[in-house]
Length: 371
Ligand SMILES: Cc1ncc(COP(=O)(O)O)c(C=O)c1O
Image (cartoon, rainbow, N blue to C red; front, side, top):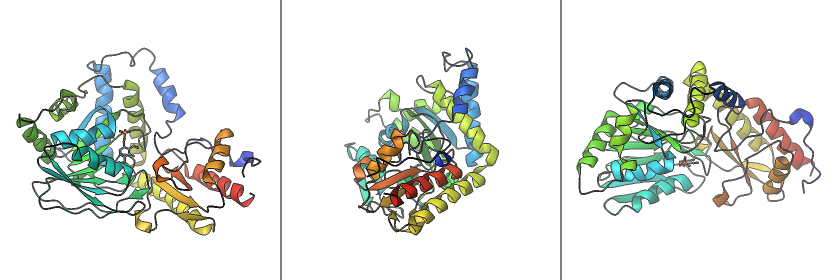
């Protein structure tokens, strides 16, 4: 249907990467890394040059998120999926309650459900819908996903939880631009390959004093075997010394630090407002075109980090995606594979400019309207 479509030169985006994860790593970051020559890569993570980089990154995140004193910026290898299990094993006492609305929040729930000595309860919303999490009387941990990457749903508010309950937020694809007060979370965690423009395999978990204490309490229960790689004590001990328990990818930390510096130059409020401008453009476009619609019906749940736009069945989104990829102009706008929708899923992560989002929407409109 779109085989003869040619993208006009003036509409080619400055960067073709619109994927929702991994996100685009700016080429300037690669150049900056290359400029470190023999001084960084190939050095032990216990040496000052790497520890200083880690420290700068941790302090940068503390500033960006306005993290209160007493909270620790805990880091380690494995990414958010690793933390799904680590939180079940090392931070949950008896029961976790999961507010799910898509693949990732459900994956977290399933991780906890598989642990025989804790109970996991699911409060499920329909895909495409959002959820309002609440405290659950007999749960000692509440699990919430800030931005459900599979469906493009963001949450609007955090629940208030009781004294002895931890509020854990998987912020992987929203951290940094989906509004969230980190000081209200006990564990606010993310992988850096989304808004933070780095690579995968790494995690940041910002932990409150309550969460740090919980980690100690659970570790003290010697009847539970926790593999050392999943030990919160190891992760925390190393993080306060600007290290990771085992060897990290230094380039991942380098890119993350570059992005934190870049975002700190603008500040949190500005980054959020730039994200909102892109979201307003893309959802406005979807509402205006008869052949498009927003997958997320309720406006307040429409993410400012990942937009999901349905396309009239007359036009195959996959066919158009293929043509745009062949022309090396647009990559990564496929719908989340398991959703099975005729849909574009477009990342609005910080490094994707409003100008490029405007060009992308023009390209799609032009292709469909001339089909
Ligand atoms: C909301 C959310 N949680 C968790 C993950 C898993 O992250 P990772 O692949 O770094 O483990 C993702 C990945 O896309 C995600 O979007």
